[in-house]
Length: 65
Image 1: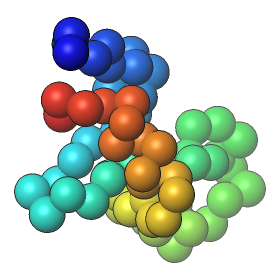
Image 2: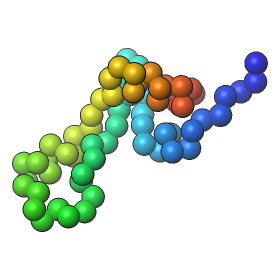
Image 3: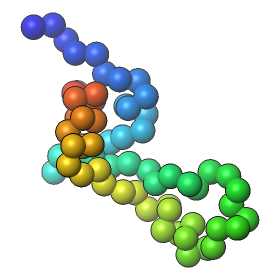
């Protein structure tokens, strides 16, 4: 079997931890920031994890990461 191609968009957006979890950045932190509270912005800075079927699908897109 030949090499698998990595999905370019997925490799820029997701990382795999040593335990095999998929890390992602949280959404809604780019623009229209004035109405968002500082506590909300602080929570958005932290990374999130993918679970279930989403994580399984992303693992297929980034096989060598």
